[in-house]
Length: 165
Image (tube, rainbow, N blue to C red; front, side, top):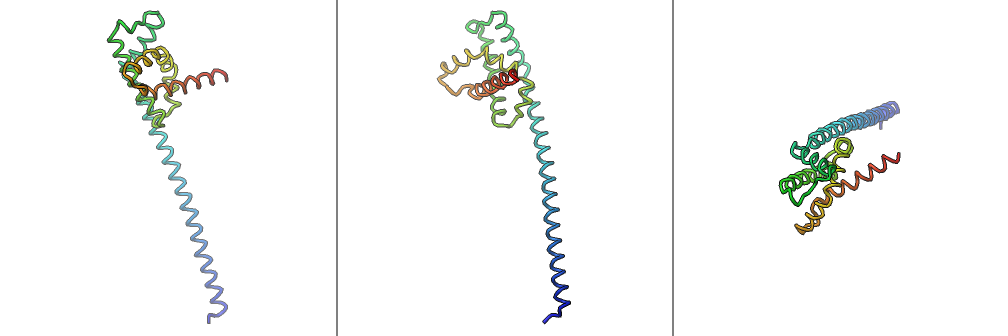
């Protein structure tokens, strides 16, 4: 029906169209990969910004943490007598529990939070451990500060591992 030349020309044109479709597919794949890399970079930057904001603890929390560590170091930490300090510790623990929840849920960057708060967080938690356990039994809530407890264990093991290296 078609001449041999027309048949070759049709085959050549279909090959060109197929090649163009292949090139277009490769081009789209490259563009999608590029967009994905940009998105991941921006998501990481946003996560970093969120983390930096979150680790800027309220001044009252920082003051409480410092005061508890200082009183403990001097041997003058008595929670049975100082009810205002107990309220401040509870406020600090609530704030840190929220932060721990965000870190464990991967909302915040754990490495940044650890580098910013690791030592003081672990020290404050260790000193407040008895208070936390008593609060759990007093309020009959075994889930009180559970995220904080998990993060502390994670960071302590991380600290031990980094000290061995």
